[in-house]
Amino acid sequence: MKVRYVTLDSNTYFSDLDFMMMTPAERGVYLTLTLYMYWCDGKVKHDPPALSQLCNCDDFENIWKKIEKKFQTRNGVIKHKRVTEDLRRAKKLMQSRKKSGLKGARKRWGGHSDPTSNPISDPIGEPIAK
Image (cartoon, rainbow, N blue to C red; front, side, top):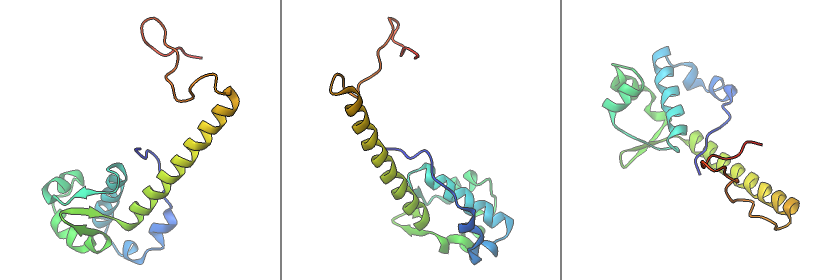
């Protein structure tokens, strides 16, 4: 289940003294990496040349030395505590909403159809718009 949406709380960043003390370049790399981690399900391979390109930053290795304490690196993989927690919370919410949706569909349709089946298709195979 791929998370497509998480809530970013600006207060989290601006109440973090480490973040507030970062230079604009350090903030850019930090934010780019954390946002990329959301997209990659919380884990990114520690590959400085690739991350330098991702962040569009020629001085990535020096900047990384200044911001790496905000991340956990194990076995060549970078993680971030808040990203991991946000993704866990978002997945839990998605599962809960899926359960509620299936329950509501079963109640409404009373077993007359499978609530998870594909929509009825027209002769050329495209779903019929309702």
